[in-house]
Length: 158
Image (cartoon, rainbow, N blue to C red; front, side, top):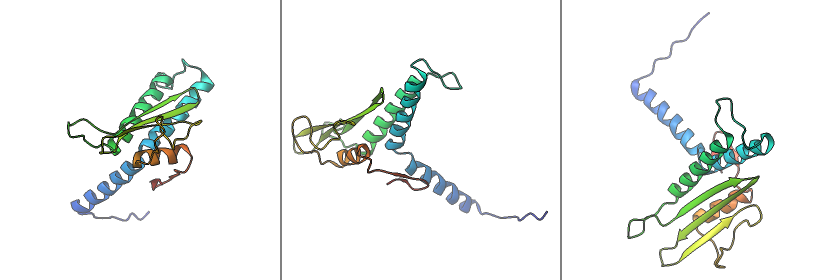
């Protein structure tokens, strides 16, 4: 049994670790959390509201935590700061009873706010005031809800 010995310099090891971490971070997108929330919600629909996982955690709590994580990740991705210091763009992901809704609030920098609501019945395009939704965040959410965003293993969401 021949064993091959590979010698790495410390800098090479750091480079390998950094590449691996970056790869994981690009795959862990808000859509990953939202997709996991949908799958957890499907389990709740099948097993019942009081169902737990093997660790004894209620599935409803896990689904809610995934919704919060998706909301935070999407908001962070498109966060901007208004001149008063408060964030101008935010998102809320809500998954219940087989449906998922993503509500976005965007400030265009010209004094106008738009609010988009995306779900399976209304897949975005126009906000509640009738304004066209064309912010990058709304476009990304619209693509996800319309099935245009696909997860490619090893490359993340495309």
